Amino acid sequence: MRSASLHTSDLAIGYNLSGGAVNLLHQHINLQLHPGEVICLLGPNGSGKSTLIRTLAGFQKPLAGKVFFGEDNFNNLTAGQLARQVSVVLTGQVDIANANVFSMVAYGRTPYTGFIGRLRPEDRLIVNQALEQVGINNLAHRKFDELSDGEKQKVMIAKSLAQQTPLIFLDEPTAFLDFPARVEILKLLRQATRNSGKAILLSTHDLNLAIRFADSIWMMGKEKPIATGTPEDMVLQGQFGNYFDNPQVTFDKLSGTFTFDAEQIGEVAVAGSGLHRVWLEKALERKGYRLMGETKSGCRISVSENQHFVVNFINKKWIAEDIAAVLEILKKLDLSSENRATTT
Image (cartoon, rainbow, N blue to C red):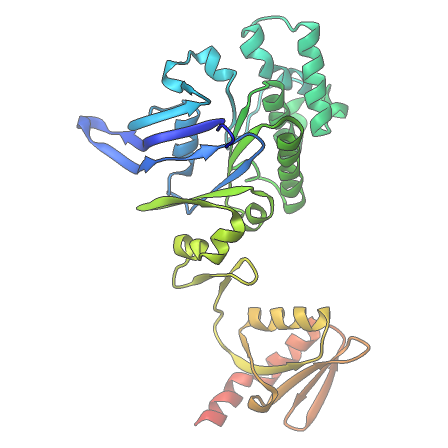
């Protein structure tokens, strides 16, 4: 069995309040994080994701229980020893005036040089390797505060790599990024685990990317135990629905996404095949049309061989070149009133 880079023993997290009161978020937490793993921490807002990361990183004390880095109880580690075990990237944006990218990444060498220590040749080599690994060596002399959000996040990841810790924790590392940048960041993190065997824990709200990139998921919920497992097993076991479903939103096991019921405004039958049919059906469901069998609906839309759309309704026919045109035709037909007439 692989030895864990981190494990917890009967951990309890939360906050000590004034007057001796305690805000207990979770207790009896027994988790493991192994070398070469990417763990995604998921859960609704307020479920305790940031509190767990801050507790594991030593930024706040646990209410009970223990956290181990390897065999070392982190309560017995000095701040310097802790900084050589785990590097942390928090949610808030970092802005330091006049610092260039190389200097920002070089801060990761502080546990080895001291806060005002000079970089040795080997430190500079490690910084340059981190810049190259993240693909931002061309930004080394740029001012950090002039970078885009995605570039800044890459710099902070390079800093964590330069810190050369076996563990990296990231709290919402893709929160301010567009979709391509989020994918790029997660690919970088995956590469770091494969190249150097680091163990990475990151919190995120992006369920789709978590399912795609995580080796394992830790699922947190309010007043629920932390559930763990591979993404695919958790989908099959209904864990995502258990922790996220509400009357308006439901997790669809087949697509691996959340769905919601739009207000029903009519019934439509669709015929044809291929991508044009798939995306036509998505558009119809999004607008609130219920997809029916051809014999049960007075409106029928077919995808022609030349990828146009043919709308048939009460012995009338319309040709639409794209989905937007189909939706405009349906709007004029007012199928909701037609449905009311046929059901009364």
